Image (tube, rainbow, N blue to C red; front, top):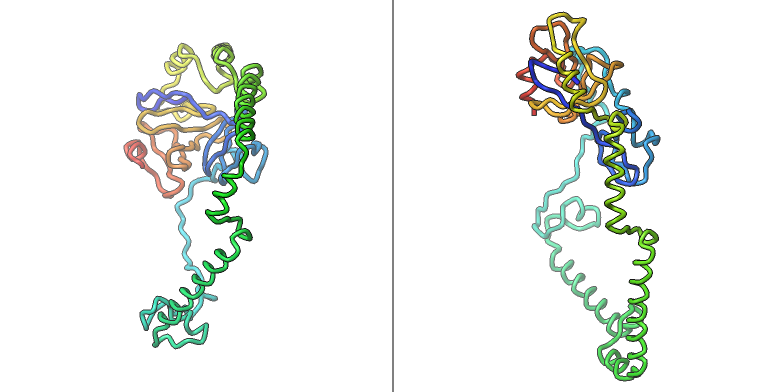
Length: 293
């Protein structure tokens, strides 16, 4: 929790849930540790999978540097020849393809190709019509004959069996909803009440803080000109003009910005907050920091 130029800072986080999927660069918290996804994460992936998750602490950059590279990339190995994607004869086939199949790119092949296409379509239709069973099809006459030969008593028996099955299925679910991944409304209300009481009884376990405790800490932490007195927080905090930020005693004065997915270095001992933008590799003041996209 930080107080910058009189701006109130709040706490918050996204708890990790292994049963859902996540996109790249999402931040989650588990057992008081923040993690960031390094690629899209499928549901069921544990937080211990280093192929998908790394602790946010491990992404802290080194000390800020504004030195830019002074050499250009080598052009060795770049191709000199490129495929001819032009269509000189305007037949819809690129010159490179016509050359590859031995055709003249200056003479249109559209008539030949269209003829071959239509011939192939006609042969395909003929094959299916002559032997529909091989393609899991049947003629309308065969279909109507099969329906007319169906026994009425059999249809009635099937209908009765269907109704009996529906009734039995409904009763089974109502008797044991948990076996079908369902729960009753009374169970929902009870679970919700237990969840609320759990958070209220131990907010620290959910990376939250009571309002009265928050107000006392805000009064005790105010930025001054003394670099030894600059405050910081362990975990996530919210700045209204900026959004969600994160830092710990292990990485401060580095601060992670959730909105830009970027690290900022907080320069202590200044009358007004000054930050080093790790992406832009330059120093910015408070007004620039709150105006960043």
